[in-house]
Length: 349
Length: 270
Ligand SMILES: Nc1ncnc2c1ncn2[C@@H]1O[C@H](COP(=O)(O)OP(=O)(O)O)[C@@H](O)[C@H]1O
Ligand SMILES: [Mg+2]
Image (cartoon, chains in turn brown, yellow):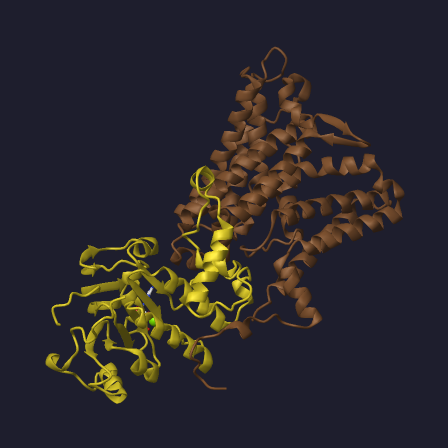
């Protein structure tokens, strides 16, 4: 073989690697949602064998409803983790948004709080907007002062929680105190044997939209690029600060919609709803095959991750296990998912 | 011939990083159609010099001209708009993205009409097709899978992607910062061949390299950088590799009259 060739030809070097293990590795690398899909299917088969009530339409319907809050918030968390960030304030922003919506909409005649008696549509928009602003604050602090997202959102977790308490006290506002539109996300209807909640459909639509955006827009590509290697992205002419800021704002939008969904799902607006939701949303993203190092992951994976957490909780409960082993199982899943991610990332030529 | 204007030039460029002096009044000229090699010791300011023209950082003082216009780039995006493409020493490819996405990173082809302007929706089909065409034009079109993630490629393949990106989009100047440093003999030869091809097409190229035989094979003129300044400009026909090393280390100084400060190559008109 001569050291110079007349025309450069790299084709042979681009040949596929062979062998079964590298094949699995590179397939998982290309389709990171395959492993959570596999886990979900196996888990559903096992739980059905342990208790056939698991696979009943009523239980499947229930599980989609148990997924809806963490599932919607995990969309926001996915966008942020794809940029190699993390958002610990997701739950606090969500609570702030829903308390804002509920307090704006009620009147003192029907409720134990002062209330503002705004029309429901306006109150919902205001609650979503405040979540966008809150996300924007996170983004601004991260971009402008180059602070680590972990620290910024650890701080705003406390700040937004405190703001909720200061402005809206610790009072729960019940569904019946509010106009129907506030709990519309929690309304259900029948499709065959299944009971479908409106909020679940909204969540699924959002997964579809954001999966499409990530895949088919310049913004989506830039999110991956920024999470992958911010210096390379910057040198490639991408305004990385603007991408990051926009991601935190869009995350705020999703969190705001999740706030509305949560009021419907829970049937009230309460400051104590879903206390573990920050970590649960991260759990769903990680189990779904998205890398905490950024730049790799999919929306469909996160949806599967959120479903896996619920399926394990629900299935183990039906199989007669109590809380402790259920929590243990989720912990094992998280570590297994991260270990798998590390292994998959070793694919290199 | 000495009146032919430079396509790219810098005068008295100074760049400090805190107390470290990256550039200490450096000059540079690149003439149409030539390959200008830039050599020098580690830390001589080669990368810093070209990064001023790539938009990666702005000089503290000094003037820069591209195609007769005064320029000062505040971002790589601005430099690209001016027709300058750079393959950075650190490559600046995004490993998780595929080959086509990397070629178009930061300048994606958008769908025509509303979807493109309002939602910045990608025209993925055109990106794939045109990326394939660019690679074809560069003689590396046999790459099978344009939708293969760059992190699954070897160092040489990644380099090929980065060079292809620069070659595909550079309209005025292409800058390569140590493109063969991490490559084997065979892969280096291919990149060198690409530089030859660019030169044949009349594209001005700045090549930073430590590989002396390579530099002397491909360069029209050789800019020797030393201590943040241009120490001399020589040609492969007037000086040899030992001279070049001697200038790099300061053991040899060359009279201005013996240097090749003006153009030496009549560019091909294409
Ligand atoms: N971003 C930076 N921050 C601080 N110092 C830098 C930076 N870039 C380059 N330098 C310093 O400037 C000098 C010139 O570096 P460089 O241009 O990379 O040299 P070369 O490419 O010739 O090896 C070196 O002393 C280097 O340490
Ligand atoms: Mg360098």
